[in-house]
Length: 307
Image (tube, rainbow, N blue to C red):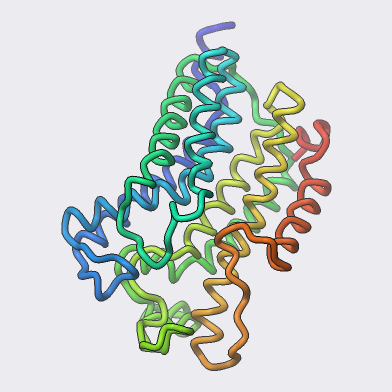
C-alpha cells in the first residue's frame, strides 16, 4: 500500500457528518448561552451553564444515534481487534440514549444519565480519527443517479429544516423573503396540550432538526456502504441507516405538522410523536417504511456498490 493511497481513506462523508454535529452543537451552545430560558424550551439555565448543559444533552441525542453508524464504517476500515472492542463499547454507551428516563423532553437540562452516550460519541470520534490516519483506503463507488437522488432528498429535507436552523441560531424567519411567508415562526400560538402560548417555532433546539441531521447522516453514510468489507456488518449497517432515515424524516414531519398546521388551527389532529420507540401503529409504519428502503436500495452488495 503506497503512501498516496494512505492519504485517501475515503471517509469524507463521515467527516461531513461530524462537521454537521459540531456546527449544531456550537450553535446550541451559543444560543442557550445568550438567550433566557423563557425564550427557549424546557431548560432552566442560561449563560455558560445553560449553553454547555444543552449542548451536552444534544450530543447525547441525536449525535449518539449517528455515531453508531459511523462506528460501523470506521471500525471495518481499521481491521484491528482493539478497534472492534472500542467500537462495541461506543455502541453500547450510545445505546443508553434509549433507556427510559435518560432523554426527558419535559426537562432538557443536563443529567448524569446523559454522560454514557456522550462518552460513546467521544469514542466514535476517536475511532474516526484513527481510521483517517491508519484505516484501509476504500474508493467510494456510487452512481450519478444514486447521488442525484441523495442530493434531491437532502435538498427537500433542508428546505423543511429551515425554520429549525434559524431557531437554533436564535432567530425567526419573519421578514425573510419567501421563507418568512411560507413558515410561521415568531407568531404567538397556543401550545397544543400545554395550556399556554409560545412562539410558533421557539428559539433553540427542536427535534425536527434532530430529524434532519439523522436523515442527512443516513444519506451521506449510505455512500460508504459498498466499502464495508464484512457482509454481515454491511447488511446490519444498511438496515440501521434505513431505519435512521425514516425515523429522522418522521420526526421532522411530526414537528413541522404541529408548528405549521396544527398551530394555524387548520386541524386539531397531530402526527403521532415517534421520538421514542413504542408498540404503536406509528412505529410499525416507521419500521415498515425502513424495510422498504432497505430492500429497495441497500440490501445486496452489488446494489450497494452501485448506489
